[in-house]
Image 1: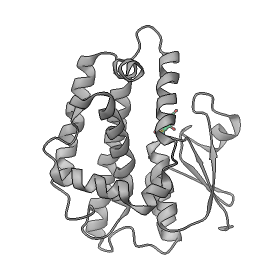
Image 2: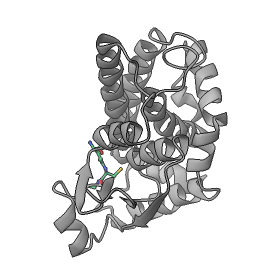
Image 3: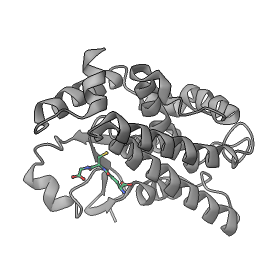
Length: 230
Ligand SMILES: N[C@@H](CCC(=O)N[C@@H](CS)C(=O)NCC(=O)O)C(=O)O
């Protein structure tokens, strides 16, 4: 296998892609990044990505997809250490990474919710999930002192939820979660996370809102309208 060049295919504000760039940065693995337009997916991308989704990682002639798979591969490829050594602890972390993915799906649903009522229901679901995460936190990071893949999985979605709260303060996603609030700040300050966050990332989110507004058929999603009216 040609392991010399890792080539990540992504979309600028995709939280799953950012999980991968956090881990690549954390492990100091050189990589190339190509961005695709998910509203107009190129043929080469559709041939590469079985689910038509980003992220995709090309390792020589081999294609990997699914952020959980890619981040584990990058960690192992670069010597490991971002998953606990104990199989049960590792499995628990994988399970909580799946919860982070569920929150990603919720956050997408929240943005596209047609009405304020639907948005409120999804926001309540997010708060509920995050309270469960709060009870798992063991210290500075998810497992204690060491930054792991599970931390990389949550940082991007917590960042996007923080942006959404700038538009709708009553979302209060972290209400009743003091440990999670402290963890979030620590993650936002974490060097690999900062390196994975281009300075204009939030502007890409604004651009996405405009794209979603332009593409909405009938009424604009409630959150998108609020965001553009700010
Ligand atoms: N389970 C996948 C989810 C990836 C995902 O949902 N990516 C979104 C962008 S954030 C995507 O490619 N959406 C395009 C589509 O589904 O058509 C992972 O963890 O990598």
